[in-house]
Length: 164
Ligand code: FES
Ligand code: FES
Image: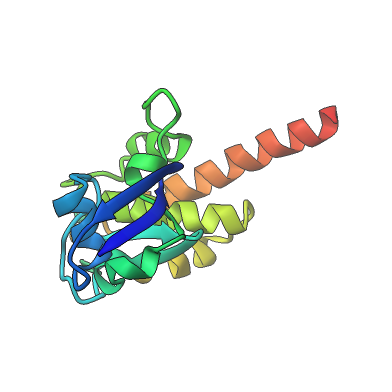
């Protein structure tokens, strides 16, 4: 079946089997392999993407469900020139990346939270990560990276507000 949707700010039209998941559509048909395959049953968050701004496990979404909607993947959060986003840079500087497998999903979960609030508490950050598993880091540095980004974005925003 034909599906048309917005992927990382670009309109995409694909002809795919109706019974595949969004995860499979992204990786197997569009070759966007930044979104990772983990449990495939909604437990690990490795496959997290934003669907109309909301964090979802792409392994639990059927491809036809994205018709007419907007999907943002890890490939869509970097800066326009392709360099890492502030959040991605902070993951690196906080030492939040070890094997890296969970990181695209963690960045998407962080991004989803930061779109809602730039003043999250550490417990709100932990709460936002409850659907995302990491075997390596112990989560502390991931929380640090998101907290750091929230502070930086909040300072940038208040600087902008003062100049208006
Ligand atoms: S692969 Fe989707 S939640 Fe684990
Ligand atoms: S960095 Fe290895 S699973 Fe998270």
